[in-house]
Image: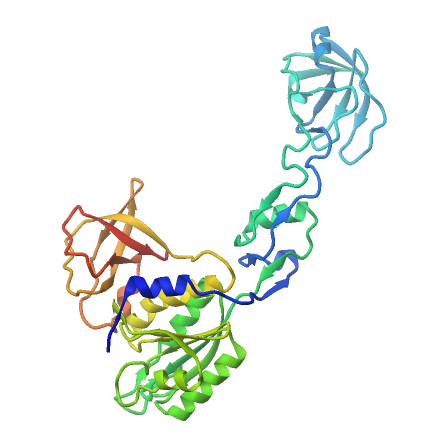
Length: 401
């Protein structure tokens, strides 16, 4: 079996074309973490009129040289004041109030002394001081938030100021999770044989899916029975956008997942990648639905889910992948052991604005050591063309913190 170069497999994921993206309108405060499916464009200036930025007195700037001004009126926020500022007079004006006609400056309360119905100018201010210009915040017709933006608290605040009650967002992809293996036990299930092991893959996958903006659906653990696997994968395809499986995709006598995918009429995008951990990976599609078949070992399943599942979740909602590659400096040597793309668990630290990398406490062994992912862990990235690294070398690190 010929295995594909890792870079080619990633390119295939990146070049997938989605025929129809799913979107829906959500009430504004429910959109946190969703991806916008429309541009947010303003339909007015903000502020629409000259507005006070502080509590103080609206004046004609040239009148400040008089030293003393008559308070002719009060201008609370929210009121429509009809009176204008005349020569030698001022109007008491509050934060957020419209600036009265005739005024070009707001002198703060702290800069004056009030005597009866007059103010004494203690400290003059420049012309235009503390006056918000029309459109200071945004102008009519301005694109404030682009389609494809993951909505955060500031986006919600801005949309509220535009009276956008229910923005259009992409639906978070539904991801069905299926772990295969007759040896697997669910949480809380009693062990009856030494050959049984506790399933962790389906739970860590659920956590990854939640963290990276998908909606997980647990299909449970399925034994190594072809008919049961076929039925479960078919169900997953029917009710979700992505089916992710662990186990059953290698070359063993009971590895039926790869056969089931073909029998269901899916288009296989690739099968087998020169990557460590992983290697036995299969990605297929049926319309705008996908199956990602991952290895069964816990560490392998976790790493390959980050590499393939997370970007696909983002692609289905036209968002940006939540993972990022940063540059770090090695604090200890790294021995390149395989002519494959390797993703090696490492510790990453930020020191004086720079990332440093070491392998303290990380065990070498099989692809089942899930505990290597604990702590401030990232993945050291080396391509199959790379060689061993020395202390002080700059390296690429995949961060998911």
